[in-house]
Each structure stands twice: as structure tokens, then as C-alpha cells.
Length: 498
Image (cartoon, rainbow, N blue to C red; front, top):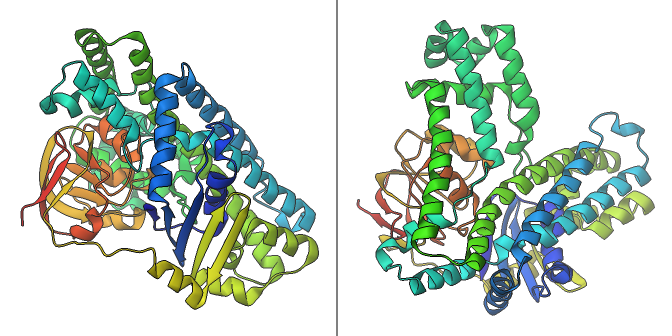
């Protein structure tokens, strides 16, 4: 079963979790995956689980979350704790004067990062594993709501209301901060609004008052790394100026937008409380719904810490590459033990590493991992990959956020695709991430191939109030730029109109 399709990933980052899934994911769950396999074509990764294996892990976790009192709360608490440890470590990774570090120093940083990031996944992957591939937790929750008398017409709407987070995610807080900057501009320098609406970012930057430039610079210093997915990327001051331009182009007062967002969060809380009371939800399930919503908040919290870590580790990887006269990409396709051997014993196979950067297959089971290259790797994938029928006009998924929308498809995978996104388009992606949030804000509807109800797309679409259908499996293969589609997120159905 295809687990995920990640367009910008390497062996360095992905083996932290891939190996962890089979070797120590059972530390906090009691059940690890039996085996895992993935393919890399350059920096494009596809990874596969055994279908039965993945569903058994998900069912095991759903049982624990529903039947083991306090487990879901423990998961959320430890995601925060491990994310804080990872962030704390990341903040100490040296970014300058790396030539002064010994090979032993570099290895220590590399090894420590691998251990801390790996332990982080023993908690952080639990909300993903339970729902992403078979909606196992979502199905259990829906079954409970059916027992409470909820019908098919309301099931998705009620599910969204009851699992709605009552806390702000870091994405919400980041966007809120940008709106506060826009509010300050509108209140103190009304003449700047016309400049933001009509001038390019370079001109705007050169003509900003120092206090406004200072606010934007502070915002940049706090969030610049959130574009790093998973090999490269970093926001510039100009990127935030473009986002401010988009805010002013809406012709709405930034303060009004900000107030509406806060009011929406409060209304969601009230709506949730009323529905809990109306359906007479018992205490056990009230806790489950609350923690389910918190899975969404902790997902973004831990993701930001993770992005900081991989961003800061890039400097270490570049320095290792420089010392051994190989490319950064070759370092990114080394196993942990190979990095150790290179740094401490000066032993490595440059030609094999070069082959891996083009095409390779990684396989792992408990305490064992292998990498295949060349024809052997391609033969393995022939037995795994399946043909997909893309000659269809309707897809079914789960509702990330209810509602209805119609518009033109724009395939948005990474930040560089966002230039083609227009207000009112339907954003279609494999899975959304923080780097494409500016495009999501323009969307009339959002469709993803992957992800469960606690996915990034579901979280952001709820915060923005945009209809969203997740887990369609093949949306980017079925639809193309310019297709007119309708998104019925109340039923989790997407149709191509023409």
C-alpha cells in the first residue's frame, strides 16, 4: 500500500522515521510496523507499507485511544514535550564557523539529531498512523455518532464540529501575527495600502517606514524556516511582503479579518459545546473528541519544531559535503552508519552514493535496513507499483471541512507552484504543508490525495472555513490545471464538470 508520496525528501530525513517505524515505534504504542519499503527518484520519495500491517497498526492504536483512559491525552502531552526537545536542540545547531568543528563534533551533532528526532516520532506519528491510511479512528468516531442517532446527511458536519480544535494552531498564530502587522500599516500609514496594492515587493521594501520593516523582520526571524520542506527552502522578507500584498488586495480591513478569525474560533467552541449537549455525549467520548481536536494543534506544533531542525541540519550536511569533496545530495543519501564511518574513518563509496541520488530503493524491518540501486532497485519496484485508472470523473474522500465549492483546478505541490493560484481556484495537492498556506488562503476549495482528519489540509481548511476533501488517493493524477470541478465536502465527493 502506498503510504505517502513526498515530492521533496531525502534519505537523511526520511530514514529517521522509516527505520523508527519498524524498530522502535512500539515503545509507546505496543505495536510497530513489520516492514517498510520506499523508492527515491532524486528527491522524490514514495513509501509503502504492507496493507494488512498498516491497518492492524491503525486498529491497535484506535483501540488504545478509545478504550485506554488517558492515552490520547498522554500522546498529545508527549508530542509537545518531544517537539520542545527537538526545537531546543535545533536552536543550538551551529550555523556559522563550521570549519572550526572537528569531524567528531560533526558526527556528534548528526548522531544526536538522529536520536532526538527519532524519539520524537515514537509519539508524533501516532495521530497520523491511526487515521491517515484507513480512517480507522474516524470510522470509530462515526460509528459512535451513528449510535447516537446521527444520520448520513449530518455525519460529516457533526464530526467536524465535534473534533474542532478549541486552541489556536501555530499556523493560526503566524497568520494572526501577519494580520496584526497589516493592521498597524492600515492604522498608522494608510497611504502605504495603495503601494502594497499596486507596487512590486522590491519597491515596497525600499519605501517602508523603519518601524514596519522592523515588525516584518521580526516576523521573518520567527518563521523563516517553515518553508523548508524537506530538503531546502526558506522564506525571505519579500515573501512576507507578497503575503501582505495579498491581504490588502482583498479590500477588507485587516483588523476586520483578524476579528472575524477570533470570533470564528469562539463560535466554533460554542457550537461544539451545544452539539455535545444536544447529542448527550458521555464523558468518555467528550474526552476523545477534545483530544482528537488537540491532535490537530499538536500536529502543527511538532511540525514547526521539525522544520527548524531539518533547516538547521542543512548547514551541517553542507559542511560534511565540503570536507569530503562530494555533493550535499550525496551526503543526504547516506545511511547513519555510513556518515559515522566517513567522518570518523574517512571511508565512503562515492560512486554508489552518486547512484543513490538518481534512483534507489530503501527497505527496513526491525533492526535491519538495506538500500538497492540500479536494475535491482527497478525490478523490486515492478512488483510493488500498480497501474492507476485515471479515466474517471468522480473521486471520494473524507471531509476535512464541510461546505460546497466550484472552480478551476490548480495543482499546487510546493511553494514554487503558487504563482498560478488565483482567488477562487480549487487547490489540488498530494498533501498540503506550511509552505503553500498562502495559496490555500486563495482557494474556494481544497482537495488532497493523502491525509486524515488531523492532516495539515484539514486543520488549515477549518481555520480558513474552506470546503476540503482529503484522502482521495489519486486527485493529482485524475485532475489537471484548468479542469472545472465541484467539491461537495459535506459528502466527501469531488466531480469533474468539464
